[in-house]
Image (cartoon, rainbow, N blue to C red; front, side, top):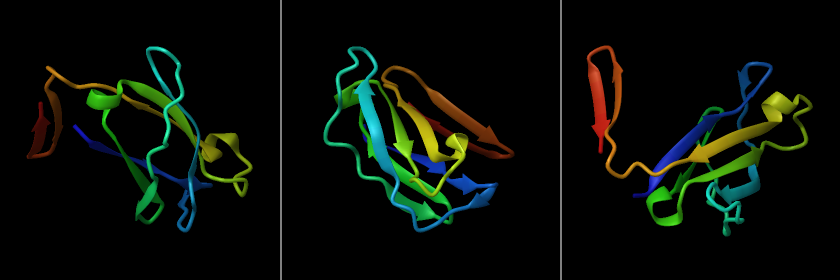
Length: 103
């Protein structure tokens, strides 16, 4: 199942727009094999970006996204990401009176 993953981008705590985040690397978690092509990274909102990945089809993966050389602080420049299979598991999230469940 194709799932959208999102991540915030901040510089000194302030949302940053207009970037072109790029994959530094993306690999299968089980074998360490490179995954190509990289999923496209798209803007979602002010300082928030997203990409889609199907772990059911392509396997669990880990990677790193580079926000660009305008970021001096390494903690802000690189985003570590992981995508995992969810077959047979129930995922739940509860906030206030809203509950979202997928499975």
